[in-house]
Length: 214
Image 1 (cartoon, rainbow, N blue to C red):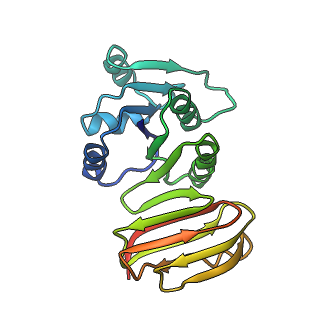
Image 2 (image 1 turned 90 degrees about the vertical axis):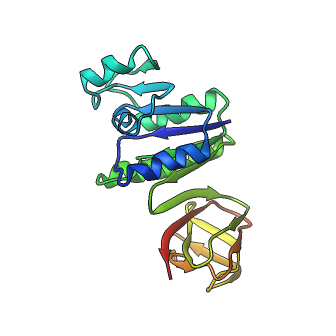
């Protein structure tokens, strides 16, 4: 089942998110605290609002409290609101998860949310961070990407080392290569073909597809 989580990070073109939701057609929409603001702006009533609500205005909360399931946590806790949303999604059987609004001006928050992809990954869920410019996800074996000709694609080590790297259909192909965090040379590769293939034999790779064409 499919889930969308709206965080309280940066949103640019709201029509992008509205259109993506329409095409993706999730089974559930979960707002992490202040992500509710964006949901309401694009005319979406979430199924679940989760967090400590330090970023939600009283008027917003009063409007939504009879329309959505409210899951409340204390402000002082050992999990971020986005982490709790991922946990909620996984515990309720959602295994295809898109995260909006989890990148932004706070680098620490953005980095934490990239780290959280591994949490979903380890729980057999497919999770992706999506915004107007990037699609970010993890792999530990093989992926075939279509409709990517001329796009910029980075293949980076999420684990300390990834090896047995094969890249097919790229301007800079690789064959049985090794890459470490100390030398993440897989940044800003280019898709020569409409379909490309990425394979690694060990480790976990971070894939970033950007809208920058070359």
